[in-house]
Amino acid sequence: MNMISANASSNQTIGLIHDLKVTIGAYNFYLQVQVIENASYEMLLGQPFLTLTEANTQHYANGDSHITTYTSYTSCYRQTNGVVNFLF
Image: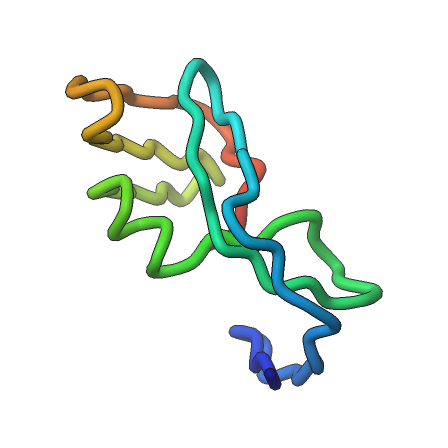
């Protein structure tokens, strides 16, 4: 699969990991993950993740981001304040 990043760079994936357990805070998610070599990021969470978690994001001029997610796993809302280490 050929992936095109937001900066218009293009990378060929080297494989797919099925049901990779990713823990963010106190929550576990099982994601389908495409693997690429030499990425400038550790993990890129995109629209499938935002849809899975029913996320709302707010980005501010000072660099802060607030993310509110809802997961059916926990049936609760969680807001994370501060700098977000994931790229959307």
